[in-house]
Length: 431
Image (cartoon, rainbow, N blue to C red):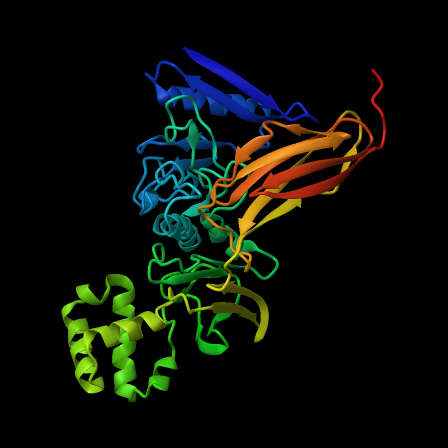
């Protein structure tokens, strides 16, 4: 049985989408042929696109689409479309093959980001790929027993409220019109993977430890040759600071090598070459294991004494900066879409976003503080009036009731914030 759905343009009789649901999949080719013919008959001026999730399909549409979840683009090989080289669009990638929650561990969130970056890189590199569409932009509710067991699919680069995950930086860093800089880590000791990634559209970034400049780091154009703005890898957090300990240049080089190895493996799990560096340094400085361990801990990026600043430069000028490691407190930030709800006829709704950040403005990705809402006056809350933040983020919606003033009260961690709103009716709908 085949059921058909036609979606037409609101302002014209042109068909803009044709849906075919297959309940008996005996002949896919015939279905694709009929669907494409119907769309062409309704509007011959518009191109048609067919999305496939299997190889070897015949091509009836103007543009070939393929849901490609492979790490290496499968359609770089020959497809049976009747032509040797057919441009195609990746109509789905990454999402359901690597679902990532906003509160997943740091390593998974970084890998999620790089999977999106690799698809963008491959799309720009290939002469056959006309474009790529991720699956999907935002997380969404799923049917019962689907998703991650909570009836939600975490396929997006934003959460269900359209608030960005780490992977959103893969796109924002390429297309942002203003200076953009997102860091992959807050340098939490139990989370930090050993490398700090700066997703940015800046020419370069500089790292400072306290007031001391550690170094300048450039975009990784060796790995990402085609991205307009490759990510920046920051893997040196000591710079020349070690020489202040009285090291010779050779000892400083050995120490920096030891520092990188200890950051990933720890001093007790060094590889063969790193053990040689440790032995040479130990004998040259006449230190025991405890002395070297204390020295390494002092210069690790996760040290409690470390405070870092990353500055982004465009055209030699610092245009944006982020701080890490020195923000101790936490605070709830409330950001409404507007403090005025303007209604043209019946009612309007605005979104209010909540983020829990440290004193440096970094989102606390493992904060699940409960939030309680109240309202007065010309507005009401859409949905529940109590919920918990998810990965330091949350949102709720406010609906207009009547013209005039209103307010929303937000209570979190014993602190109360009042959001004043104004409802303006430009005209009243006559029933």
